[in-house]
Image 1 (spheres, rainbow, N blue to C red):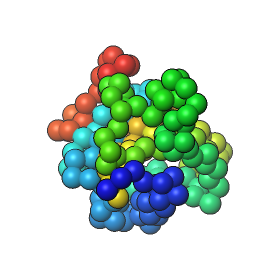
Image 2: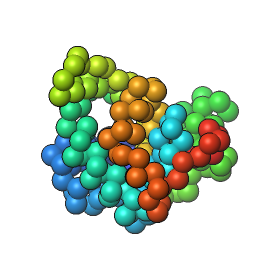
Image 3: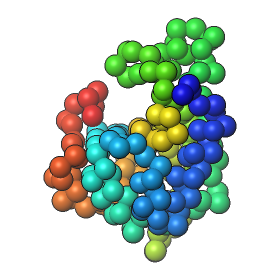
Image 4: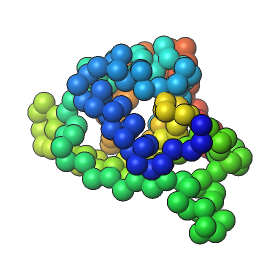
Length: 178
C-alpha cells in the first residue's frame, strides 16, 4: 500500500477523534498499529506500546478530554508529501526524525489545532497544539504533540504521577531525545 492522501489521513484522524470524544477506548485502540508511540512536548514524554497507550487514553478520556470543545476546532492540516517540491527545508519536515525518509507504507500529516478547554470551575481557556501524526497503512502509528506549558501541566495532572512510572512510559531530561 502506498502513501495516504491528506484527505484520507484527515478522515482516519476524524474517526480516531470521534472515538476519543465519546470515550470509546476500544474504538480508539482499533485505530492504532500494534505498537503505537505517542510523544508529548515540552514534557519530553514517550508513551509506547498498547498497554501504556490504553492506560493513557483511559486516564485522559475519563478526566480532561471531555472538557475540550470538539465543535470549536480550527485545523490547518498539511501532508508531508505536499512540501516535496519546495526545497530542502520543507523536505526535512517530511523526513523521519532520524533523518531517513518515511518508508513507502507510512504517511505523515502535521497541523495546528486550537481548542477551548472549559474546566469544571474557572474560566474557559484556549489552547493551541501542533501535532504530527504518522500512519502505517490505514492505522495511526501515533502522535507527536507540542503544546504550551500550561496545557502540558494540565495533561500531566490528569495522567497522575504514577503514570510516569509505568512500563512503556519514559520521560527524558534531554529535550532532543524523548
